[in-house]
Image (cartoon, rainbow, N blue to C red; front, side, top):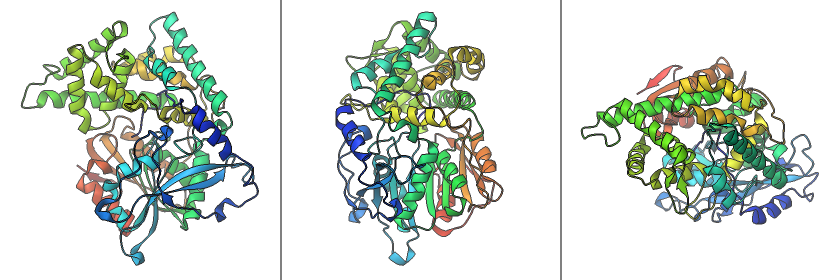
Length: 515
């Protein structure tokens, strides 16, 4: 569900459909109204919009115990002017399945990205949270700029196909110029189509939306479960509203102490570690590893494949071809979870035989592209939120200076992640800060879970988040495992710790290790 921060994409055959709705959502009819006094009108959920990724409405809840219901919450477009124009934020809820007198309140989820639609993701993984639903209403939402919540609009699907096929690791002046021009054009299109919203999609804005949501839902404190970027959002919320923090869990933790460059470098190391672990696992199987004779051979063959694709793309999903950029994205996507390693093996074996279909499908998944060729607004939202949050604006000279360190961190992914730093260079809105402030003195305990093999939010970030939250607030738990996130791994030890805190208020001992 979460994605590397360097991704570039947007959904925009939806421009003609969603832009009028966006502007209507920023109208003046609600000026002067107190947003905390609104009542939500919960109704059966519609099918997801294109910006949310499309598809059918959410399925009924397991066991016939109710259904997912959706509502729209109004929030100020500009929190500096709370009586001014408003936007609509999309919410989804499943009511608690347990006795009314045992209900704690609402448990609000954020699944990361930034840019992931909570309205579509929560019901897709609803079975995972059935135990939590015994005492909570489960609530997901599309943060501002995402899905149905004033979505950021940039380019149409055809132009996105071209953008995401471009060479993202330029080797000469001509390729560098093309990458910079395409990036600048994408950013200008975002400003042209969504300029009114772009200044107001910072994480601090989303955190204020969370507090409004808490109040509108009728809770004295915010009970919260954040994954990946959702941990940063939760940390910013705790900093702004420490006295409103209820029971909260942060899983797959963003390191709040790093700059954008340091974060990208950490991801290079993290994905290289995941690739190392994948290669070792493949060759350790009882049957012969089909993509290499040794772990080093597996990695060498992947590096050769990517080098060959730079000049000679393979047939992919017709009519597109598998470029070096698409193949790199597909490999990254497969490294997010150990459950995907078998797909990576199949995709590599297929590519070595001259067919890039599987790797391209993995890349499409990473970029929010559906089988019908339509993009969600995942990466448009990802770009707009990251650029609004992050103060540094990196130049090609900065990238070239940092390339040796990135290549040392990962011979496979270093260039790709280093060049991703230019994504905000021509962004219309200045970035808010170098790093998020998550200090939350006086807040209730927050369970912070780090996974030792996490490629996208490396393990070290959990300890730094726990320390940054403050003494007595951040409680660190380590999961010795693979993949991006611990709770959804199904590990029994992790589940016991999370359930013990969220359901019964038992804070695990700091430094607890699950393996």
